[in-house]
Image: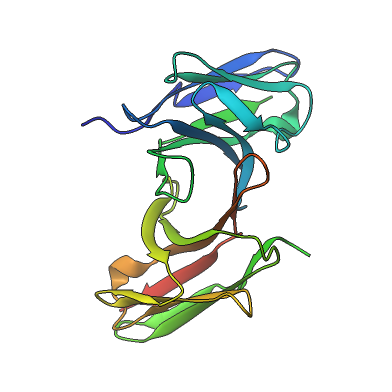
Length: 114
Length: 111
């Protein structure tokens, strides 16, 4: 079966523009996670969805970041008015249950803000 | 203090060596524990879950000490293909659900 997919794989944008990143989780996985990884750094937790709801949004770096999930499947992470410090790899993962299960990661979207 | 701390590394070891990674976590309410592996410019992949009773998978052994809030990973008879970054991961229920990754320890296995 297909794994987690993310699009685009790479995105170059200009400072101040909005970007939208997409994640398709593994079919049947109810939990979906977004992380950010800056060059040479560890993973930074952004947000987690259980179904379509996001119980914990505290990891979002600023109000320029938002995420939604519809139909319990696809999720989009939107960054408004991008800044150079937003440049990073954005990773999405999904897991079968509520938590404590294995998270399966997508290949990530490499975002570069010029 | 970081919520999950790991040995800074990098570790440079010869093939066949035994190497141990350590990790500590600060939140005593942490519920689940894992080791993930991340190859250069790739996504993380689960290496193994960590249980209080300890668990072994081939050359890999993981241990959890809840009293000391400490997790370890032991790799025996290391191979060139073990070269990667090893990430300690902790999950906790904050009313929502949160996963915290350590910064990772880089391992280089040399021929």
